[in-house]
Length: 161
Image (tube, one colour):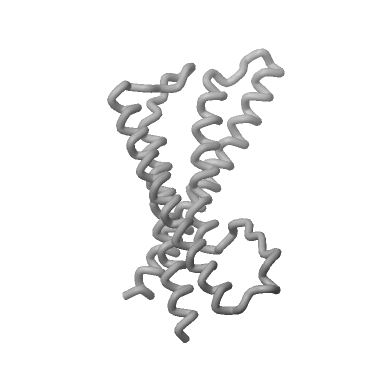
């Protein structure tokens, strides 16, 4: 079952990355149109709102893939002085801590989205509702949390092999 879960999570991670990439292409096209429009005296109305919301999707959409590939920054200054057992324990602890942080951030984003929905918060220029974007971010971060849990399990199994 963990193999099927890992495969499914990998597919979801890649889908999130594609959403992120599509948003990035959209931002590039929007900004190009806005710059050309400004030079012609016809800027794209609401380009700043759209670009800000899309950039949030770009950044958080890549988080699950980053987690799956282990792309976080690691400082290993003390690695040469540690035994393999201590190093493995610290690795498991860091994966578990990452999962805890991702799940906490997902919960916070979800609560923020509920509040935004209740208060009908929206962007300044276009009035885009903020809650759907916050729910999407919470989903991206929750997927990253599941990836961190999977990495913790893999690290635990690798130590026992």
